[in-house]
Every structure is written in C-alpha cells, then in structure tokens.
Length: 91
Image (tube, rainbow, N blue to C red):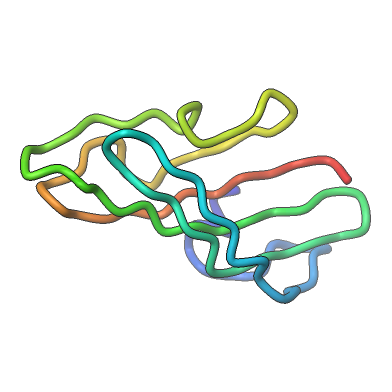
C-alpha cells in the first residue's frame, strides 16, 4: 500500500485502466485516478479532496467498504486541501 501511495507500481502488480470510481462523504470526495492488479487483489489509488472551508480530520474507513482496506497519505486536510488514499480489495 505504501508503494502505491508513492505512485509506483507495487511488486507483482500491473497497472490497469482506472475505473474513475467516486466515493463521497459529507466533508470530502475521493476519486480514483490509478489502479493496479495482480489477479488476486486490486489496488485503487484515489485523490481525496476536502469540501470544507475548515481543516478536517479523515479516516480511511470513511471511504472503504467492509471487504476492503485503506490507507491515507495524510489524516488532516487543510481547507479545500487534498491527499491520496489507497484501497486494496480481493477479487
């Protein structure tokens, strides 16, 4: 997950076409911009953008389904700031 957050292809994975998936919460929107797969797992790389004029705290759990795991680059966003989120799921 750390390698994907750096924008590099994780070992054993191949870059795939992004699904342009969008996940929305009350204070932020996560939009997929890159995707990797190894046949067993998918890794989606998303940009999370704050919709708030105040600083906000985020948890990856706000954007992932129960069968997924996620990790944010930063947990606190400045007003209208952004960070990256990586989501891994089993195929």
